[in-house]
Image (cartoon, rainbow, N blue to C red; front, side, top):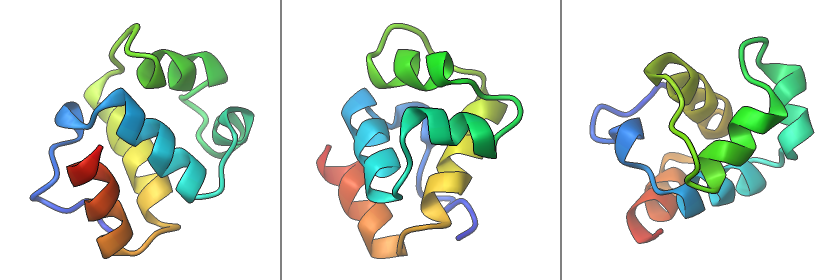
Length: 81
């Protein structure tokens, strides 16, 4: 799924990031294996609201997760959480 123009990845909550990752079937270490520029610590910081990631890293994470989910699943997780 290409990034939806109606979803601003900078406004996704830490809980929604965690749920997107889990729903897409990734563990934090698994993300590290999929994306060269993202390590487990980045994912942990984002999901625990301890530090924001760069726009490019958030976009890459969102695209990775969204590629495993339907548009409806992504929208529900982002809107509700």
